[in-house]
Length: 351
Image 1 (cartoon, rainbow, N blue to C red):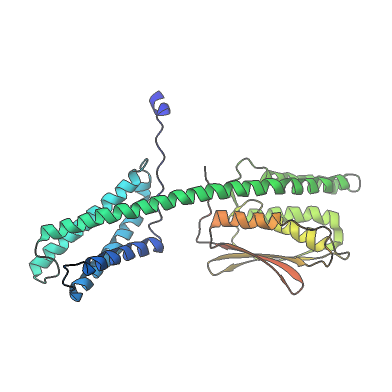
Image 2: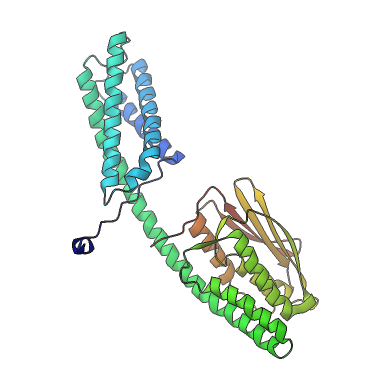
């Protein structure tokens, strides 16, 4: 037992997503380029028929290897250290060697003349070419994976810094609201404290990398709006048109900064107040959430953009480049549209 503590199992090198189209495209391109270079090499007779057959063979192998790697990736990823890449390399070489041997055997029995006369040389050349190209391609995938890990770590640090700068502003405003209500309406102050407890639990949770759900986030937004409604009274009006999957994973307190900005810069500066519109709907490929507010001619105080920038960084970190946060002024209202792809699994752990 002490030996296992002194020599912990080395972490597994992350493998690329072999089920994705970019990996299949890379294998197809590498195979086609290899065949083309061999066809153009000096000493080759330049037979177009042989070239077409070779491209067809490498394309079929690329599809076969992609399917095999996609199915076996979970098992290979459990291997320690760099053994996942060694397993992938052995699978590439073994699959190509067996396929080349079967093709040569079938071709020689049928007499079609699709492969070279020497089956041994054909299999040997295929295995050597696959071994060299596979090693280079896997080295590229490994470097890209390491680069992505460094980028993700930097993004997480940046998001944490942005979040740390936003929390004091939100918490101080909330406590001021409670202080103003204690003497005026003790019952409302008690409800506000309960709402703040839930908001604090989300804002100050010990595991900030963990995700909540979209339904939980809307519940937190409702608690925050109840706090602000006690402070602003009839000046704050809210319209809701929400039809989204409540179980969808979502970082905690992602939408609350958008609602806070809508109140602070849209409703609060207006003497008559204004209406905040909260929308959510399913769209092709994901979910779209909209928060919009009236645009005040003279804002109470200039914003520094921390809230919106924080939301953009967190969305990009958790959901990737397909997600987006768009902010623009339309018809006298400031509209923020957040697109969250359903097909992308949010990142839950970067430790």
